[in-house]
Structure formats: structure tokens, C-alpha cells
Length: 261
Image 1 (tube, rainbow, N blue to C red):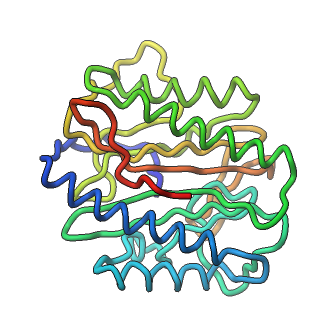
Image 2: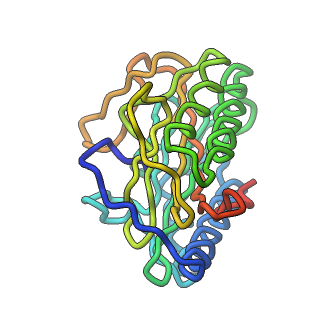
């Protein structure tokens, strides 16, 4: 779940044993997303996806992280087409051939959080939209590659932005990635755009970062709908969202939610 930029939150470094618990939490998230990839087909409601996600989490001794978070009504953030993030599951919203659907899920497991997201195609989709998904996913890994001891958060941000803009797309600036641990949202913020000369935190071993490019086919500008949650592109262009939770180790980035197909 992405974070709206706000006051700085504390950066909390994790021990290797804590990172292992977080890896297990994130593997439950990855398993959920892989299960939903198989079940997300035309004719299925986004509410049904939410039910399946919560069942999977609880079957694996985890609780859904988003349900009730600041009043969010679902276990899953499920966002279609021009919806960027934080879409609310609904019995009235039915997947259709040609849709794209961004599925963002988090769990709490043994006191630690996992958080990841992927954007899925429902059957055949427009070639330009397919390229948007490809580039967004690539930009995530460009960012992850910079999550190394001694770099700055801005190195992650600029790597994502450079890859996205090279392909003619735009990164969302109103919502950002974040640290994660015993809270769903910890410091530091992880924007998907560079901050120029502005100093950002130095990356240290033990940080765990939810890196999550949100990329639009058109303008970067977004707005929040009247439900108070669903974020959409202002120009109604398609949007893609991919996310991994990543631990920073002395030997490089460790993708805790690895294995998402």
C-alpha cells in the first residue's frame, strides 16, 4: 500500500532474524498474488478476489494488513485501468477482457508486515498498455538495484524515474514507497522521482523498503475519488503498479517478496 508524503517517520533497522520473519511474511504475500493471478479472469468481481486473498492469508497464519487500516474496508487494494492505487473491492466491479488490474496486498505475520503489488492483464490487452506494464515492472528492478549500502534513497528514485521517462511514461508524485517493519508504513519515504540536490537518507544495512513504482500512460497528475481512497489518473489514462519489499544487506538488496509471477 503506497503512502502519501507526510511528516518524516522513524527509520528502524532490522536484525537478520527480523528480516527472516519479514521474508516469510512477504512470501505469504507473494503466494497470494500468484494465486490471484490464476483466478483473476473475466467475469470475476474484485470483491471475490478480496475474499480469496483474505482466506489465503489466514490459512498461512497471517492477517490482512490493509483491512481496517485508517478505515480501509478491504483486505486487498484492487485498482482497474485508470485507477492508480487503493481501489476498494466491490461486488459491482467485474473484471472484463482487456482490463488491467493492479493488485496490492499486505499481511502481518508474527508482528511484522509484508507488502507487494503486481498489475495483471485480463486476457488480451492493448499493445501500448502491455508496454506500460513491462516498463513499470522493469523500473521496479532498476530501483531495487540501487538499494545498496552507501547509496541514497534518491538513487532508487532517480533510477525508477529515468527508466520510466525514457519510454515516454510518467511517474506518480503524490504517492510514494516507504519503509516497512513492525508498522506498515515506516521511514524513509521512497519516491519514484528524483529530488534534485535535496539530500535524502543514506541507505544502510537493515533497512527494509517497499519500493513501488506507480506509472501512468499519460500525465503524472492524479486525484482521489469521493470514496476517499481510490486514486485515478486525471486524464483517465491507464496506470500500472508493481511493488516488492526489499531488505538492504551488506551483500546487496534481498527481495523478500521474490517469486511473484
